[in-house]
Amino acid sequence: LVLVVDFGAQYAQLIARRVREAKVYSEIVPHSMPVEEMLARNPKAIILSGGPQSVYAEGAPRVDSGLFEAGVPAFGICYGFQAMAQTLGGDVRRTGLREFGRTPVTVSESGTLLAGIPEDLNVWMSHGDAVHAPPAGFAVLAASSGAPVAAFEDLDRRLAGVQWHPEVLHSQAGQAVLEHFLYDIAGCAGDWTTTNVVDDQVELIRQQVGDKQVLCALSGGVDSAVAAALVHKAIGDQLTCVYVDHGLQRSGESEQVEKDYVAATGIRLEVVEAEDQFLTALAGVTDPEQKRKIIGREFIRTFEATARQLDAERHIEFLVQGTLYPDVVESGGGTGTANIKSHHNVGGLPDDLEFDLIEPLRTLFKDEVRELGVALGLPEAMVYRHPFPGPGLGIRIVGEVTRERLDILRAADLIARTEITAAGLDRDIWQFPVVLLADVRSVGVQGDGRTYGHPIVLRPVTSEDAMTADWARLPYDVLEKISTRITNEVDEINRVTLDITSKPPGTIEWE
Ligand code: XMP
Image (cartoon, rainbow, N blue to C red; front, side, top):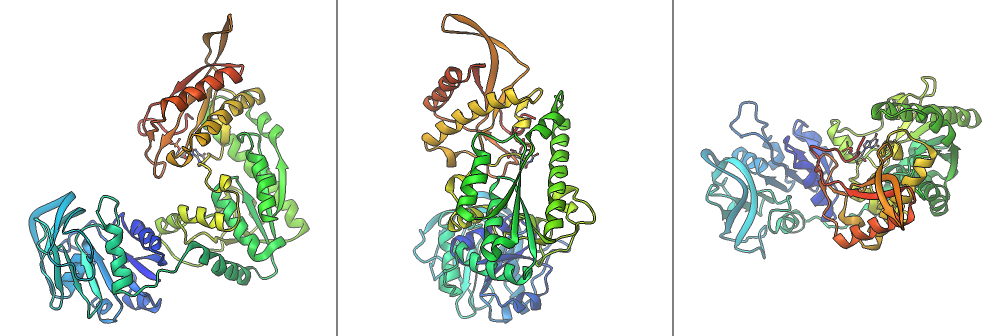
């Protein structure tokens, strides 16, 4: 275990991921955690992250010198580097010389930390203060024009640090620097993989659940699918999954859950056919927010009724949630499971159904969840699928949602997805909504006749987290193929358009 001490920068998660990429398990802890508590977790090493503050700012987080006296290897990054220098008696000054973004660094001595790294290095910096002299016992390894000491190490005490951010991709040789610290200074083995998680979690889940019954709502998305597969591996038929088929899924999605997923996992699945119920509730509704509310409400009603029914057959005490590590970190961290009323999570389950939660993915990042899914034998098509909104195609039909319109959209969407897969572009884009402008008609000509059909919008986007996005620059020949196939094969569509709006100002979905 490597602890990443979060000094309030946005980089702590990135550092934790990079450490795991080096096959060393890492967790993030807040800087407010007492040193004794950190040491009690018996870490192999501690990494101090960057932070938004100056070490001279009032109330700037301090580092307890006990951390460096315990004999645990430590690595400081940016603020963490300065805090280490200051705590151990180095000279940290506010120079007024600030460095932001790409910065050249000159390596004067490679030592162990910078072994094999180019002498002239471009790295990503973001600092105002600088270390002018290292604490006693440290060797200076590199400098930049604004940072006389940009990297140092003390091999006797197994302490090291860099002024720059090795965790960001713009920093040349960043991963190599981190790995030199982890393997060569801290002596970490580098043998952790996401599959280790399977064995650990299976054991934990068995202990937590005993012989009780567990319920999981499958959405068709990656997280709930992997969480359920893991729990199933641990407790087999004590797990029941519920899949609400609301008729707003894309072509093949329900089959993927009902057939491929069950075949791969052997999970006991209750499929609730609710298409009529959802479409009746959506009849005549065109307002996007109202559609979302109706779909959410119907989902909860259906799930609630099913949960009650199942609970009467076999009393259910646990609910599986696909919570991921970023959610845990962002909501203040913490370990263990919370005993809460399920409606806080699933959104409106009845008060008299009370569950304990099982969250087997709460230490993992999304890409690790995908790896785990593959390791558990789930189909790759399911594990690497693009995000898809809960309200489904209901918010990709601009206008009233009807069965006929859903069929039109499904046909066009399937063509777009098939061609993207055929072109090998699935992993280059974040998501590819296809939107039916159901209330718009335009004139076209097909064969010798006039047509009066609907336009389809292609909305391929690239993104890292869906908070911001850019339109994907798909190759023209792929776009052409999609356009030609859609107008040829989907009768009601006579026009294909491409959405070239970034987010902001547009959102990814149209509604
Ligand atoms: P927007 O359209 O806001 O979407 O740019 C951002 C991301 O969220 C997805 N999305 C949803 N996901 N329930 C979900 O589970 C929803 O109601 C919902 N609305 C949007 C969207 O597909 C994109 O990935």
